[in-house]
Image (cartoon, rainbow, N blue to C red; front, side, top):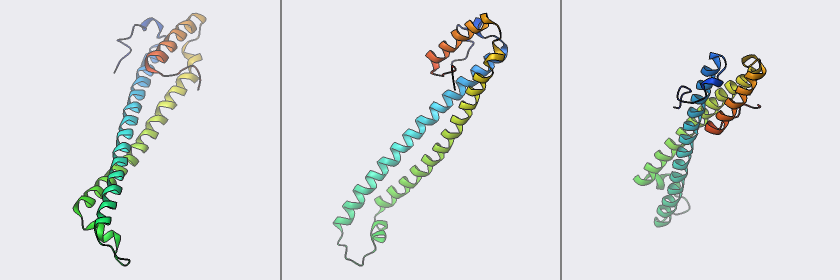
Length: 152
């Protein structure tokens, strides 16, 4: 994590609370990006398992002689590869659902802090010279971390 200590913007901080808020904002943004990446990987995993399940399921069902009154589920459960794919598919969907919830929570927390920073900007930078340093800090945050602090 790139902390503000490593940045060359220490003269633009203003009050100490700004530094703390910006470090927390960057940390939440990194957490959000990490969770979104994990969500994408789990969705690709679930999609791949679903594709393999359909492919092998149709292959196995077409190879077996299935009559009208044969239960398709019992024919599929009789094959261990299909059972494994069903297990992997269910694990993939459960993990995907879990990460969707985590991403929503992390996004909400990030947006709340970002909006608080925007709302409190008039308190944190009161004089005109402070507003110039605020502009330099905001442009740096936007450029380096892709966090927009100009408007909600």
